[in-house]
Length: 100
Image (cartoon, rainbow, N blue to C red; front, side):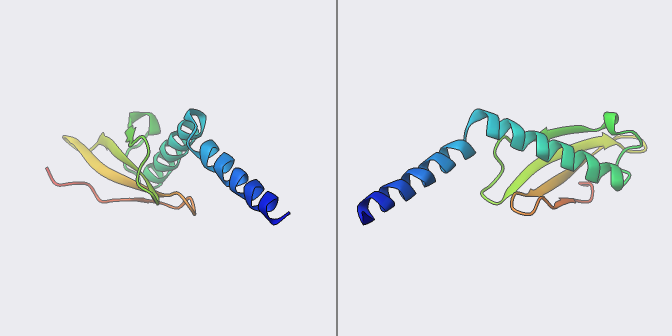
């Protein structure tokens, strides 16, 4: 009986891990990162209109974080910032612009 429970538990973990890395799961992850970064950038007035932002999401991020480059207009040139998305909590932070 114990062996059956161990095999069942291992199977459940395998299914959960497989689901987390499906193409659909990665697409949903990238969409969450992009949406969250766009909202955070708009809240910080990175760009007056969200459609002027370009957000390039790293396909998988790191083990703990999603990462994206956020570019938008500045007064006379484009500025670049990094958006960091906590995979566990969903919290987002935007860096200050990089100096050109």
